[in-house]
Length: 146
Image (cartoon, rainbow, N blue to C red; front, side, top):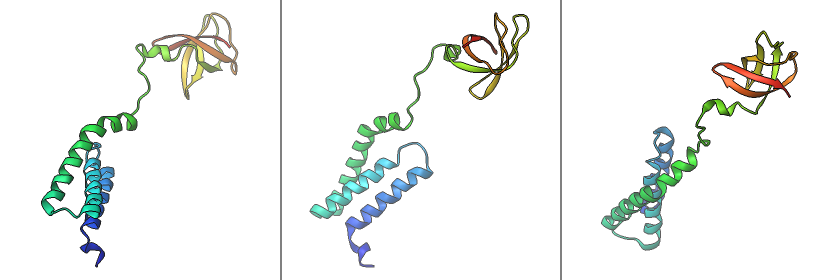
């Protein structure tokens, strides 16, 4: 195995193993040591430094990539939608479908986001009618015909 006698190849394989290990162990941490190993492999290939210098390059590049790239990478990987102050507000203004007749004196059913909700309205709404959500009170949606 003449290929494994090349130190740059060993650093490259170590970096690839560390990058693959990131998929097994969560936390977005090990990937930076894989990046450090790849940077070290490139330096070994270009300059042939001593073993001590190789470990310094590996340590410094791993720590620096961890410091400067981790927060950026976490933001990109775990982007969340903007938070809503009042969770009930995400319903208001959206459209649903009446699945059971709604009368002013009796609640009916509305399907919204794949879930059936109890609904009330000031006017009668027949099943199959598109409705607009105007308010949410607990588990009851207040709707009007769309």
